[in-house]
Amino acid sequence: MLRPLLLVAALLLAGCAASPAPAAPAPCAPAAIDRGGGEALCATTADGWVLQGAAWNRGNATAPGILLVHGLNEDRHSYDTLAHDLAAKGWRVVAFDSRGHGLSTHRTDGSTRTLQQFGDADFLAMERDLAAMQPLANASVILGASVGANEALRHAAADPLARAAVLLSAGDNYRGIDATGAAAAFRGPILFFASQGDAYAAQSARDLAQRHPGPHDVDVVPGSAHGTNLLLDPAYSAAIEAWIARQVQG
Image (cartoon, rainbow, N blue to C red; front, side, top):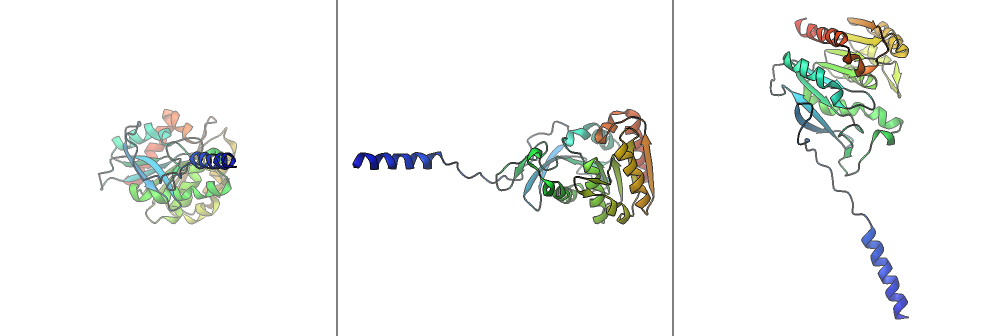
């Protein structure tokens, strides 16, 4: 009888030893280095995501600020060239990895999550990322691409600090993130930028511009590039940077 009891006890102990330890909480610690050349920084969202980002000219409190929001399946490095260009022209720039992207896959409870695990509610919650990063950016201009453009516009409509928005390939509705109401609510200048071959984004740019009561420009350019891929064309990138510069001059 003793041997069976000892065997049961051994199995129980083995089972306990095999149980995974609870994950340690993830602190908001900036990455050791930002390969894009900026100053690494981080922020924690209201619902417990640790976001990694980078800043240029962050210490210059008098410089105009711009917050860069990437699209799905990207990270902040989609903006490395633009961030360098704007920083060289005196802008205070912040770019970040949205939740589930790049280095922003950790939560404060120690768990990790990626874009492939996201559902509808996760996409809608991505707007909280902007709310967490904006205090670090202190940005008057919000620039977003694709889904990030919709997030940028919705954030700008709710943020008194936001004076202007640049929307690369915005959509009337991406992943349940509806931009139509925000287009009507925001009063600041907007640049709607899309390509002709990206039919949904091109039509959405026109739709959203019609709803917008403030000053705006609609640039529907040749080609089929979407989102941050528009920045790969030097002419398009220069036009976007020139528009941004005019927001300070004006």
